[in-house]
Length: 252
Image (cartoon, rainbow, N blue to C red; front, side, top):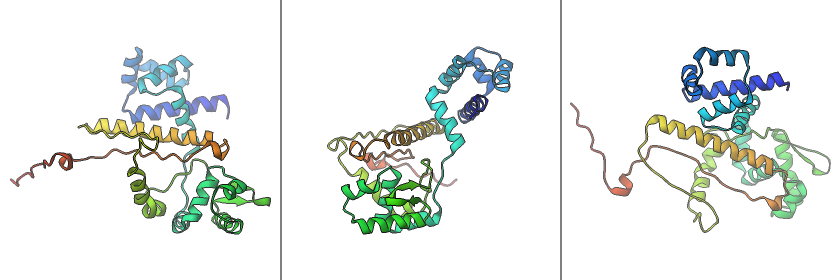
């Protein structure tokens, strides 16, 4: 990627973030103490200094690393498996588990050493993943992903439909503190705009979670452990806590 392409990609990410935060060029100009025409010219000419980019990041409440992540994400995108691929994994928990391990850079030898699966069964499952187009099985059972690291589960796809509720329920019922985890549950009354702001922040945290996993995937398996992270916000009534219920409006 050339320097010009890189700059354009960063500025595209800046523009997209400004739109998502509903910040106009005029509002940005006010925050930067510039004229609106000067801000428009900066974007048109792509004549940003690093200091100016950092100032705009401050307005957006993000850092330069986050901006670069967004720019990279816009270029690579995130992909999904096909419905057929997900259905095959959802129907066979051991096949799904093996794909999870290969996706996280486990080698054939380390899988056999660490998990209760025989060599013949493991090879058979790997060949199924190969036929599904998810991995390549090479000489001496060398493993290579055929899907991008940006892969995410299909929303309401076969895996989420079959395993989603059980997995989340199993995850949440544990004593987080006793198992060395971290859990907070908060509730207050918020505007729709504030909820949207939180949703964007949670999206950024989820993206960083996957980036850290990709960085750590190069460590040996014994230096890693599976970490679950649940993120979510939704309307929630307090009636289950206080016993109070909202009055039902009478028809006029």
